[in-house]
Image 1 (cartoon, rainbow, N blue to C red):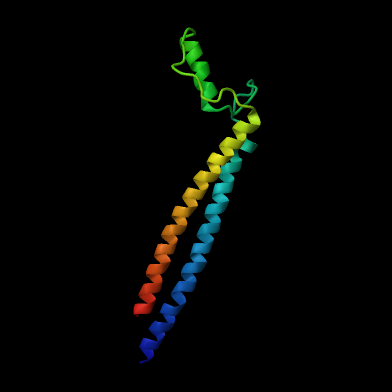
Image 2 (cartoon, rainbow, N blue to C red; image 1 turned 120 degrees about the horizontal axis):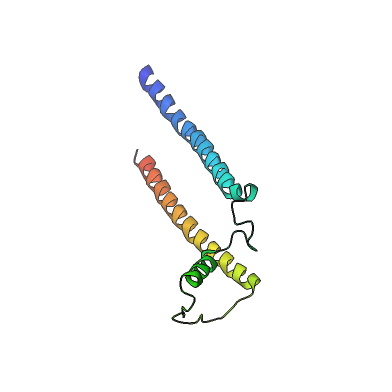
Length: 125
């Protein structure tokens, strides 16, 4: 009887250890993401002679095409035309928000599914 009670005590302590470990892992991953995101801010690896050191791939592709074939004619024109920098930046931010929303919805959905399975198992026992 005593061994059974000890086993129950050990099993009761396991979830708290798991939560503590997952907290440290989560915090470590958040710090790692922050360091990766801030890395380019402290070490400028962009083109120092350029007006925009971290220009997008669109402008780099346009420059490369002009160097290879100066007579190149685009197949079509953009629907909207040239947008001001603020609008372009806003559209990029909107795209990032939509992507983050979809990503975190999926993560939350699967975490909710896992929690429901866990609750179901606990009720069955």
